[in-house]
Length: 226
Figure 1 (cartoon, rainbow, N blue to C red):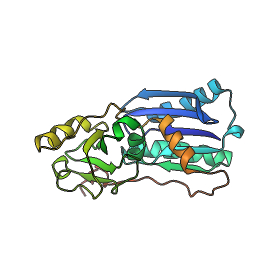
Figure 2: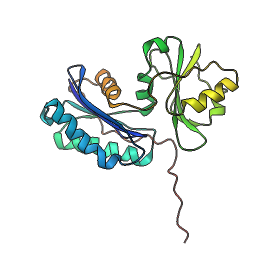
Figure 3: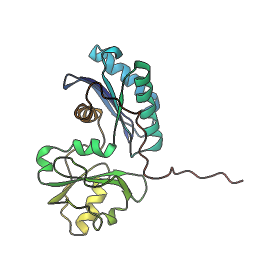
Figure 4: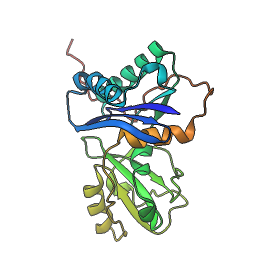
């Protein structure tokens, strides 16, 4: 199975071609802005490095959020456009799933994974996962202080905290007496992990609806004065 995966949802841009169960080519770049200019050149670079054609691809995968509104639209537009042009299915993966799947098995065996991502506000995007990466609750935007008294059933052991909001959330949790070690996993989604998730979730011939963005809050915009 050959999977082209993309991510522009947060503070990075990454593209990977996974071929026959292994990453064939990929690139990752940290960036707060500029994903719209970077994503298609990165796709071309990865396809060229892999010596692949779009006719070789079986599936396109992309992060759907939660994340930055502009970043999500860029990634989804690119992935859906590529899939439509090549007649390919397109599968969406949440940013929270992608970060959780980046946590190593040894860390996950120590307790429950809590993924927390920056919203650039006082709250965070958060979701709990068990050691097998099964979601224990729904994605939500929540104040770090509320995490202590709103843990879902199934939370056990220490909280292994991952994501780019992890340092400030760990400080809040430990201040409340909760064991919350900081994960060694990357704090941002990576296209290689997204491709791995997609390979597990999709089977050749499976029909998919086009992925839609997962927004957990309205955009931070101000209406012009009349």
